Length: 256
Ligand code: GLY
Image 1 (cartoon, helix red, strand yellow):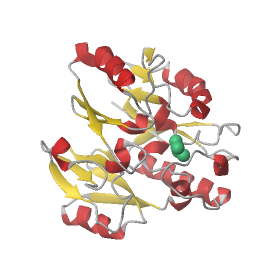
Image 2: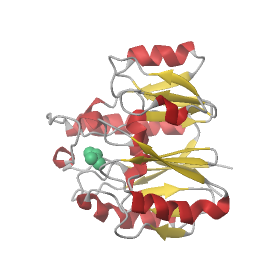
Image 3: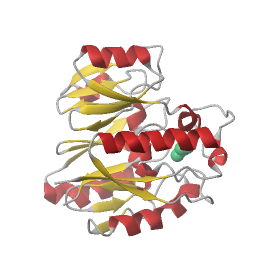
Image 4: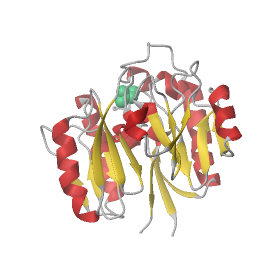
């Protein structure tokens, strides 16, 4: 069963992206594009079949494809992103997903960003953030309950999305920044904490038993390696200036 990764090249307007917890800095678009290409290469090396969508230049944040959809085993859910400027990103992603899954959508007044959704097995954790609200979480709960998923809302602080604060590195282990989310919310898992000097280091893409991990967090990378985890490092410095992280840049799911 193959693994699909949907990606989209950075927009020419990337510098006009939404920023919430990151100060504005000049973004080198050519470097961002090269870094994104290496990220796509990493997805391929780790076994993904890439579906690369063309850039949407009118939508500055469109490279962050994760936020507009949630792909589960039996269906895909279009999320209705919390930033209204991001909603026009949805139709092309929906068209791409239609080949693979039946589609349903979060309805107003619900808002949900995929970056707030962390799935570990049949557990779906959703960050209560400025982008994702309780109405959407309740809709999600009802959409997935019949398939046995358990949806849990999680409070976060001082970060954009839940997956800025915590991601899974194994079935039983999370990488967590306790400054942004309470450790108790993930008490069911072994926990690897980010290095306190690396505030944005909790976001990683897991594919099988390997991680795609940002090159800018060497102390946390060492902690992961010390735990026996194999990393494919990517330099995503320019995408981080746009408040993006490695999970944001792909939608990864099994073909069937
Ligand atoms: N710049 C990413 C976001 O705010 O959604």
